[in-house]
Every structure is written in structure tokens, then in C-alpha cells.
Image (cartoon, rainbow, N blue to C red; front, top):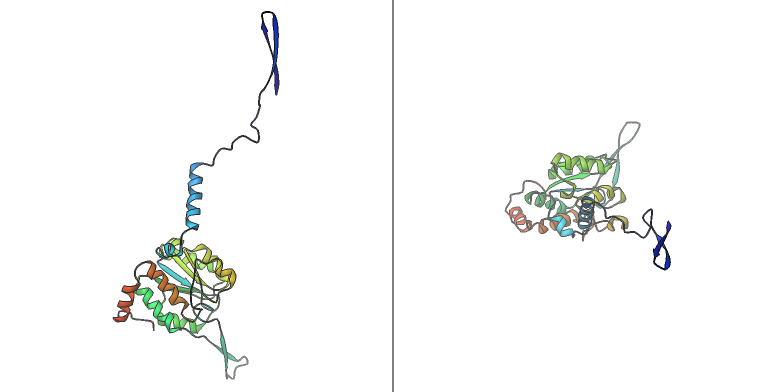
Length: 237
């Protein structure tokens, strides 16, 4: 808005025009966000830049998928002769002895372990009992819900849990946990979102890789191996 100002001086008349603003222009500086919001955003940015080793040092719980992680992903179905109208089918899978030893090493290093899988398999249940896994969740359609339920039972934050996966169904818990791990045979979408990728494929020692990585980051690997060799483990291979 413009205003005209007339000033009288002896012997002359001076007229000038001044402009005032009734509201802030688009070029005015924008107030910065509240300090609390800036601090929160800074914490989130810092967390996203944490190295895999730094994340691994906080892990107290290791959870993993089964097919393609705990196994090589192959599923064998054998029909069993029966007089019933519908044939009985037995499902079998193969497991790595290296992973079994890894579970024992995890326990000696203070890590709890568990599996979350969509399928139901008595073979998996038997292997889980053999290895004394703390958590066995089979027939799970929503892995993120199961993941959050388990960490709730443990009284842990998501940053204190790791998840090992190989396919897109594993992405929700992998994106929610503190350390996301993809096996060597994982799909590219999964590898691109992982903090760490194991040298070995699922069913060929991938879980052992994950456990070894975490315990080494925590400085517990050497002691766990010594205790394992000394016979302190009561389960595993």
C-alpha cells in the first residue's frame, strides 16, 4: 500500500511516496521448525546412517525366516501310501549343521533366537525343538505383527532385534528392526534394504554368518567359541 507524504519547508514544497507492507511477502524468511522437531529429525537422520557393525552391537534377539534362510528354499513333498481317500503327504526340508552350531554359539553369546514363517511344517518344529529356539511362529501371514509381539514379550526395542530374510514378505520386519540381514540368495529388493548381506546362502550357513557377525561386533565371539568347544552348549550340532 502506497502513501503520499507532503512536507512544508519555508519557500518550497516536497512530496514523497512511501510504500508499506500489510503482510509478509513470499521472500520473507520462514520461521524454523520447533526445536523438538528438529532434534527428532536429526536423531532419525543419525540412526539411518549407523553402520551395520554399530547396529549389531545393540542386538539381543535374532529372528529369521525359514524357507530360503534356515533352509535352501527347496520343499520336498512325499506321498505316503494310505487307504484314505486323500493321500497323506509328508513335507521335508534340509538344514545346515553350521546353522545349528551357530544357534548354540548365539545362546552362549547371550542372544535369543526364533523363527517366523508363513508355512506350517512339523519338520521345522522338530528342528526348532532340537535347537531349543526361544520363539517358533509358524503359519504367520503378517510377520511384522509377530515380530512386534515377540520383542514386546522380551521387553526390547526394535533397535535391539535383528531379522534375517530372503524375500519381499520379510521386508516389513526387516524395515522395522535394528539390524536387517539378507542372505546371499535373497531377492534384489531385499538386499537393497539390508544393512548386512551374508556371504553364504540360506541353508548353507547364512544364519551362522549372521550370528558370527553380531557376536564379533559385540566382542563375544571368541569367548562363545571357547565355551562351545569346551562343551558348555547343550543343544545344536
